[in-house]
Length: 446
Ligand code: MN
Image (cartoon, rainbow, N blue to C red; front, top):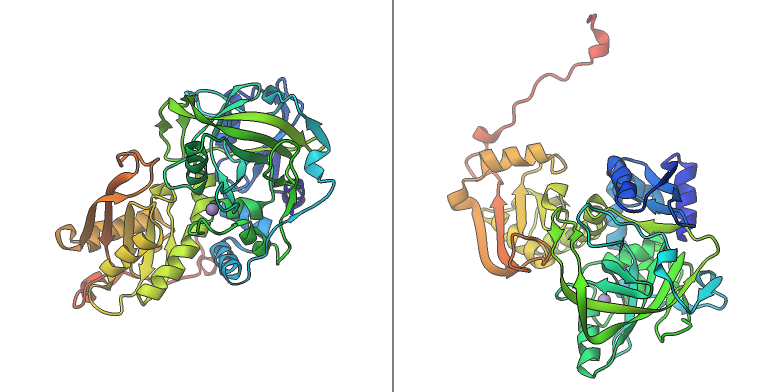
């Protein structure tokens, strides 16, 4: 489903609020969006000061909204994504290039990024940012396509600063192109099918995989539609609202940042990679897309990572019931795993299995089935009352974690886990207190 159809679907379901007042794209727009973060409504900014195009925020900040987009309940989302990943591994459906793509209804070969609705989000951000664009590139050696999401700061009419985190396939592509003195061509796609958004965040696809096949699997086997670009050799998404064509320049670094990141802290300004934009193409009257770094990322990465962790840990350790990448762990820096250990010590094995299943994590908490893993208070109580830290904590120093977690040294840090499962012989002391379940409607209460 293309982006505008998703917005229309949510509109039909009563899950859209429109901000009809004119708002400033600098800080004010994000300030309003922040008030709605996590609710079951997305926000459409109809009138942005100095801009022609509306912008939408919030497609991923609530799991009910995510479920609605995919036609399932919130709880079914991780399973749906897991099934798509499995189908992709078994029968990948490659994308197709189509003629007359909607994303090229209007084409400008003299790009001016200031004509696009690109908000400046947090108060100390270094400029206007694309926070959720899907970047497509091709491996300079093998030609395999990669799809990923990166923050991009507007630094000129046709110039962007870019972050490529350590270990990302795009960075590997770029480093190999740069070593040959070449730029890396990319397309930057704004306002995309949510299935494509999922594949761009899907963990665990290999560098030899074209992960656009995950989107095809999510769309019932329909191949992703691509457009032949006007100025670069890599395709855009045919149904995207806006596509920028450009190249990441070799041997060029310019200041980028600060940026209020997904961790809830500012990423610092530094000299980073630079994109020269060669063309801007768009649908007529595009509906642009942005996100607040926070819940939207925690959920989008969370739903795919939960699926991957559940599948991998269940294979390695028995008795696994469920997993949640809690917002208190910034989504992908940690998880809570629910299990009934099949024999003593398996709680700790589950911690190690979860770390191998999803390397960005620093923290894993393992609890029994009587703990509600979606309730941070219940999980904290389990840590406090069921974890004898000197015995039940796992610490792994100098491990690869996530670069954006400030507790790490730019990605190298300590992984730690709390085994809060009840130890054999301790069951009676850990029996949760229960009271009679009554129906208040049957009583005369004033
Ligand atoms: Mn990839």
